[in-house]
Amino acid sequence: MKVLLIYCNRFAYTPTEKSLDSAEQITKGAEYENTQVAFIQVEEEDAGNEKSVKKNLRNLLKWIERKNQPQHLLLHSFAHLSNSKADAEYTKDFLNYIEDWLKERNYSVSQTPYGYFLNLQVEAPGFSLARVYKEF
Image (cartoon, rainbow, N blue to C red; front, side, top):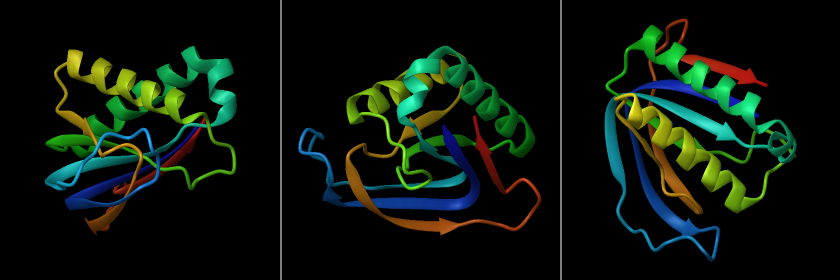
């Protein structure tokens, strides 16, 4: 798994093109302020080490939330951090699990539309933990 965390003063997206035929139809975008965006690459080998990978990601997201204190966590499937890609269905289920786990613990969390290319607007400040990269 590869994760790029970017704290954003403002983050907005608009769906532009479906990349998966099975993705539900979405036309509306969203905008967030004071949000921590997690660009997540679920890799093929993560399925064989799922329990550990989920735990590491949960801990990373809890840690960055404590450090940056965003109003919202946003999960974004980002299949551009590695050549290894997990199956699309597995990746969606994985992200759904992480979102549900965080919501059960009262985090404000959501996902960008899965299976879409998105126009992104990113306003990210420059401080030490505004950008964090982790792989496990």
